[in-house]
Image 1: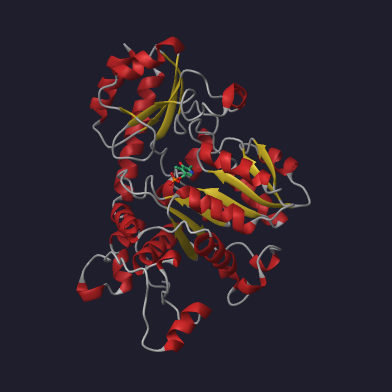
Image 2: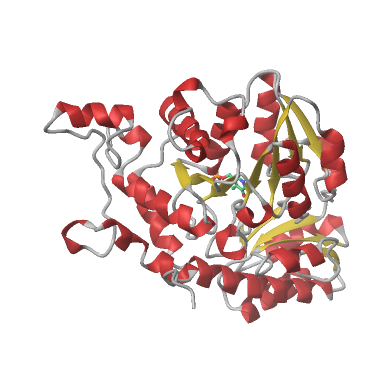
Length: 414
Ligand SMILES: *Cc1c(COP(=O)(O)O)cnc(C)c1O
């Protein structure tokens, strides 16, 4: 028998997360703190907040509020990390990592199959003289071959959108550890319920809270979590100001100060509250949507009008074994290709239930033709390199009844 107290499971911990905080007046939920300023009776306390010696104090809402801090603690527990900084959006979180931890002359290796807006910000990084290599991270040898003496960071997503490619997450983790590289994993599509990137040695985890964690399509948010696995004493770009105290906190200290305080993409307390409410039902929603997505993927794969289905839990998926080993379920993200590309708009217009809309991880099923929308700006060459077929339809599976979704897709496919 071990003496360590039993740690509650993921779902229990999320439902009771606010109670770690002694919520005001006995309320069971963390209130929405709207104050921008925080006053102090003793000036020593105000000074202590600025100097970081008054733990749990606040000075200005751009750097956090009691409501955003409660959400940060929730995300840290979900990911099994040592700390989290929340942002206004997932993109603000990703920008903060890139622009605060990289400098001109550094090199980053990224998956070629990243989220479109992340791909766009990698282009902006090049304008600031950061070198960027985009490789097929499904194979670790491509990552290893791209490394240079000035490489600082490797960036991957757990499941690529829309193609559902899955990087060799474990082998890349081992490579980063061996080479002292910061390993950033965007966990948005899997969510910490299906996968914790700490298991494969991630240094930092990104979550767009807008998707599974909020889950209702009514609040934007992003988060960066430090797993505590990276040794920041070896990282050359941490400024002297942030090289004090526990070295595990250095990376996030710089991200909070430079990325949140200076760059200003602060999460509002109102949205933090909506996201925290959504987080309490994360396991239920993601399990349900993943079950529906798998059944829908199997159904579509057998349909004569469909040329291909991309879904990690189908045995035909190239990284099926990897997904089955690492992830609890296949997520709500899938994509399929029509055999007859000329029918793309007709099929989509016939759908009654699935909503023609951009966005992911909603309670409602959302569909979008990929080539003429989210990958339009990328152009035909990039689409070909990323294997985005003209007839590709992305589906973010929601919480509807499976039978209704199957009926809707069947009547639309004709
Ligand atoms: C949506 C998304 C983002 C960006 O998040 P926002 O909250 O929309 O800014 C980043 N990465 C992935 C994988 C996403 O799906």
